[in-house]
Length: 103
Image (cartoon, rainbow, N blue to C red; front, top):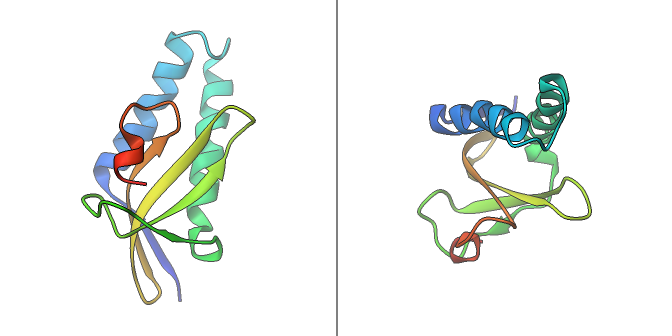
């Protein structure tokens, strides 16, 4: 049985992302920001079925999977994988300075 876990730091980062998106007017309603972040959670819940790539820098994990949210934003979900166990440690997106150091 596949087990997919999120680090507490990542879970906090995603919850904070909801507030950042709403407070910075990316979305007019907090529910829309929640739906956006829920799409990331949905992708993570199926990470075992997604193509995985080796990270350049393994500070946050050995592998990453790409999730193209829309035409402007791609998320890179960084994780460890031991058999059927996945630990998702962090997430970057293509708008972050320095993400290419890890991906």
